[in-house]
Image 1 (cartoon, one colour):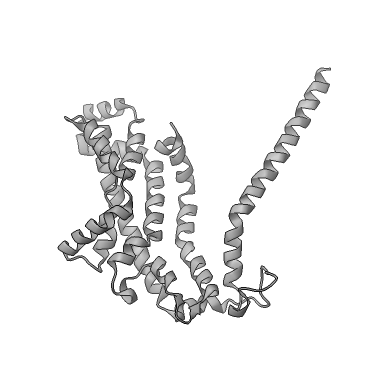
Image 2 (spheres, one colour):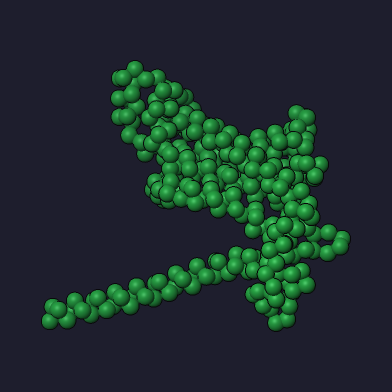
Length: 285
């Protein structure tokens, strides 16, 4: 009787496992369908993008579309601009967020919690509300149409500080006391104790920040005047839509190219990313 019950449980578990795997594959296919369609469209001739009935692949595989992206406009310049803005912006965000998170999580000073709540409240202000005063501030600095205006206005937000603070709070304070007994000051404790333990959470913030800078469209559209030299990838993609029509196959090819840096970053930091989400403030802990 025991063996029959065990066999029944194994069969039930196997059935649930098959059903759950099929459901996961279907959900993955639904999410992957737009990406598959994008890649397929990027390889079609221009006159076969919209066919009736719709077809996944065209009559020929046109790899020339990817070369045409760079001959149609200086798209390599836009990629370089986006990479510089995203890379420098990510570094600035990591430095500013880690320092402020350490001050809010590990240091004791008057009004710390009240200041943190006020700082956190800025997350409720939508970006669309800030673009006008931010533009006026950049104009006052003389930073219109510059890399500084693309990087610094959004490098000091509360999200990164909140994310790292939540992880810093989980680090035992005994480590701070041990470092202090060894003669380490506040800066040495931050650099040699807290930061090495926070690599995964920092990787999470780096990925989110890089993608946010890379995909930013509204702010570069407002602050950039010289489209040929200062445009980023999102602005470059919009240039494929003009008075002569929309080059959908080139837009899809350029979109595939623009995804490469973020996909590479996710692959390189995948191990730290999964661990960081599980142990940081995003893990529900």
